[in-house]
Length: 121
Length: 107
Image (cartoon, chains in turn brown, cyan):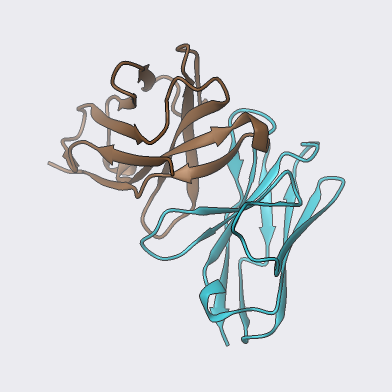
């Protein structure tokens, strides 16, 4: 069973860069049938799609975050990563990584457990 | 961006009840509509993709339908483990967008 696991700092200072990594186990980030996504959820609120990356390096992200987001893939490490620059308290959220399958109409079928990131000085 | 709305935002139901949640897209998304269940402190889990296809391992009491840009999730015979928040999501166009969620609570 494919598993995803987020890792990275749980506390980030305002104006700094949030960096998270998602490690893929029992599967390959080089799969041509999947997109690798980041989603976040402010505690007690709904889900917000941040963006995705494809194994060949192509990516897309939400227009509301595009100027601050970079999503990349490291096939040799079987990982993909999120960088969010110039963070504020509004970026405090649980960050999930998730796999989307082309053969299941781009649905998100495998999720990491989530990583709470707090932006505070 | 494609806007997703859900109704109701919350509902109270009893074990054994039939529950229906509606999701509407602001424009055509074909069948690119997915339903997720989320329990407190947990990641969402995929229930249904392509509007009506049950994800492997999901009980058959969950079902989905489509009528144009209106989609419904039905739980036929609510079970104790079904009390959770349900989200719809369109995967037709980026940015992928989620509905605001429907919280199903115990009556």
